[in-house]
Image (spheres, rainbow, N blue to C red):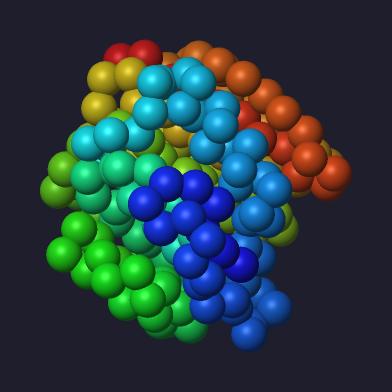
Length: 182
């Protein structure tokens, strides 16, 4: 597992030893960031939230592409330890925070985010509740982009306060790019 582009391009990340952590593939991450950069013109100065962070690869990729700050949430202490290892590998502790959070039970937001990654374990049915919590707890900046990764066997129902910008399929996984419309 490595950083695909930007400032830390080619840098290796620690891969999960625990099979319960499913990192987004390099190929899929590259597509996500190509689409994001095409949609928004880039991630420069973006505030990024990586919910269900796992290894932290999505948030760290965003930092490599000039995001200002990345926050990582995961309920698993093992995943959080992995995230912190990868933060240390890139020496980005000053522009990151990592917390043990069980989504969709989010704490009140301390900042608003421009880009949010939601990549829950496929067997959990928490996407709609997590999207609702992001709105209710004030995590979303106007026109935030939320990237949701989910299994194509579980169709995604989108709440009314989001517009679908793009959808893409990768094998057994689907991606949905949403924009928050307050």
